[in-house]
Figure 1: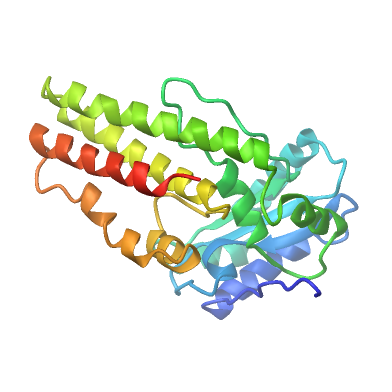
Figure 2: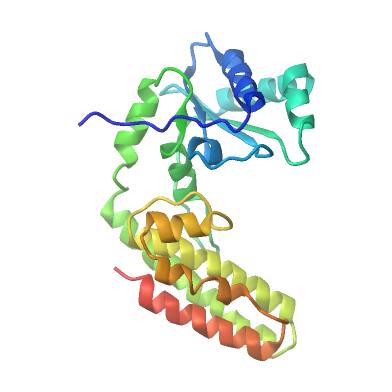
Length: 263
């Protein structure tokens, strides 16, 4: 079966023109592998006020120094180009977010909770990106490397690390709430919530795109767990930052961790 690719679905002609302008800026450069449209436009979920999110993947062997230099060049161009400035002025939330990348992702080791991190998110956003024009060899190699998922040994190690970090952060909720440090307790609860989501995706060998948005799409849709999603908003839906409520919601999240974030 030949691989299939998403196609960008631009919510306005202005989004499309801005993306094509960016692609022309990088065209003809020897170090460029693939220009990609990412996030909501790549998934057909964008609205007229959505950002334009893009990645430019450099060819195999390119250095981070090359990527950084090209990023600075692009940033200067973005700040001065009339079409791109007009695009960003066209809506209160519109921005062009373009990152030049060499496509290398290195997992980190956490301490003191430490999470969540963007390892799986970074891979997932590139894998779900829509090529704008020709698909380069590095992009094809990237997909072969990371699909269907990364190595099982690393997955098991990261799942254990994420589960441990989630439990660790949850253990701080009653510690802080007992001292009436309710904002700090909520901060740990929210961090543990995102670590729960990270572990959930690792356990099911699916790459996420974010832990702070598109949660219904990812959990109900991609993971096929609508019954779990229905229980998630209530974890953070606190009528007040009161110690007893914070402790109760931390216990509820810990129960979900033991039920759902397992092999």
